[in-house]
Image (cartoon, rainbow, N blue to C red; front, side, top):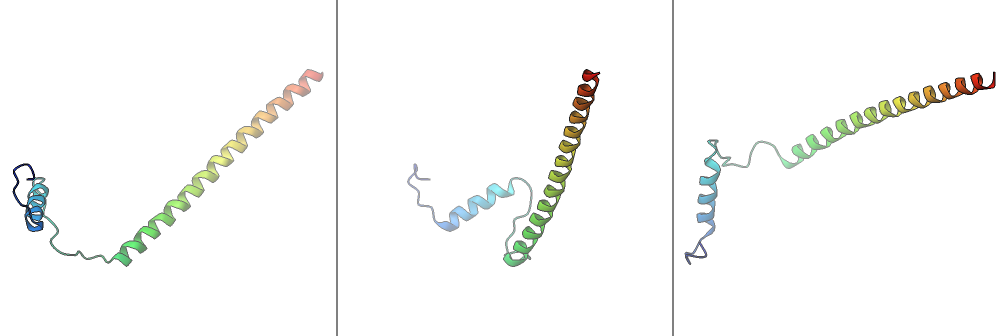
Length: 86
């Protein structure tokens, strides 16, 4: 609108943006919604805590797998050393 030197007001921008958003065929949210900021914050914190717990479990399993692999490697090296001495 600047190139055509047409003044645009906030209501004009709201109407244009609404028209663009309605192109996808969905309804627009015309109210504040049902979930408060505090509720959304609690939900996100709970989800983050679940994610952290699952990540710790994953890291623990990975660490155990690495330890088992190291033990197997050391065991086979020990067997090779014992057989080399005989």
